[in-house]
Image 1 (cartoon, rainbow, N blue to C red):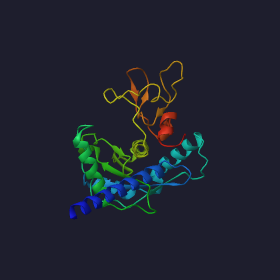
Image 2: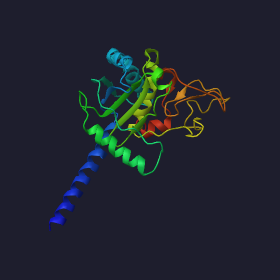
Image 3: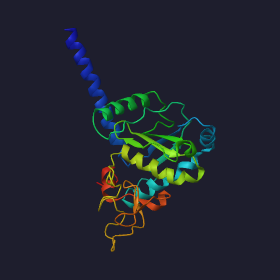
Image 4: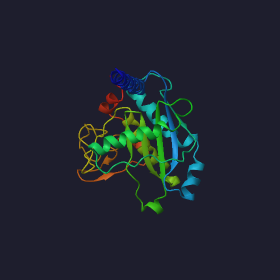
Length: 255
């Protein structure tokens, strides 16, 4: 009897979690109300330079993301006056668990569970956030110019963005952050993982352009601007990006 009760209780918990996740995912793709996105900066390397950079952040640092999503929503027919609000939250002292090297398999599943467990112990943000964006800053001089890969999870609406500490990188950092935020809403990558080349046609900002190259802008989920069949350039800001029709459907901007 006790065994049956324990099984019933566990099934009830699983069903409750599944329902909560389903509701959260639906709300994150509902453009009829203001989507609350909370940004939590984190010092990735523990350096004084990174700490000073985080201390210099203010609400305007991430307004590019709010403006970009509002403009793109309007382009795709969303009529909500303020579809997105991005708020800067206090810095966190705890780093999320590092992602595994492989993109698939049991290691990724376990990491996802660990990440959601870690996030459960972090603040929700004020006001209560629909999406939490954890932005980890790294001093390029200490990291050899590279930062870890970034990730966005639709289950839990968690974005992990690893970015450069330099002030002049803020606008390009916001491209990375916005890309991962869209992952939390169900958007898929629009590029080849091997070559990093944007996928045609959905990874092109203007797939009907003739000639096809060079493209003038970047489809956000492609992450790069295709200059030729083999040459790519990085967008310097969200002003060089847009959300294409397929991505717009994935995140609920289009039916």
